[in-house]
Image 1 (cartoon, rainbow, N blue to C red):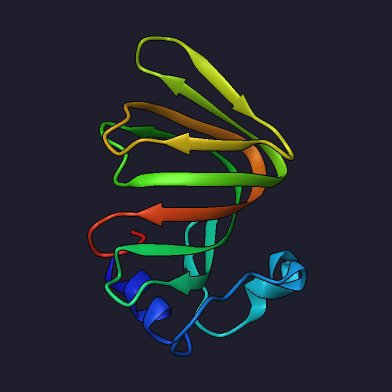
Image 2 (tube, rainbow, N blue to C red; image 1 turned 90 degrees about the horizontal axis):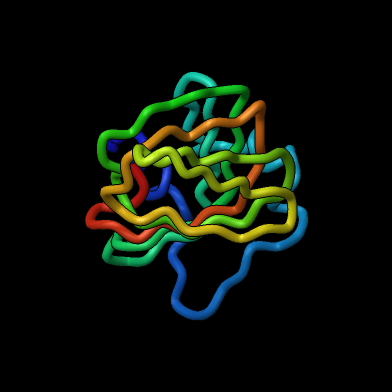
Amino acid sequence: MSEQNEATATLPGRTGPTKIEPGEASDAVFGRPGVVKDGPSIFATALSSTDRYFSAGVYKCDAVDIPFDAYPYDEFLYMLSGTLTLVSDDGTSLAIDIGDAGFIPKGWKGRWVTAGLVKHYAVYTNGGAE
């Protein structure tokens, strides 16, 4: 949590509307200062609200199969490359492919499975992206 907040805190102040440019979604974004690496995951936060309740950016990861007892925040995502399969504890699964948008609610229980992906993400939670 603190590592992500430190990265978000380095973003320039925003006093009005802003957007993520197409170039900010390329691999070049992962080489800039303030990027957070956590094992196979890399977060490049591009936008953050002043109260830290909302953050958005680009995320990528290698192949993973991560179980969640309770997903830590509400997340909207838009898949840029790869596929994400969400396997819920009840056995149902949802594949999110390139060009798909999806939502994972806070508290969701299941497995987050991918062979590798890049996505735009937007997270709403107390304290920002974790």
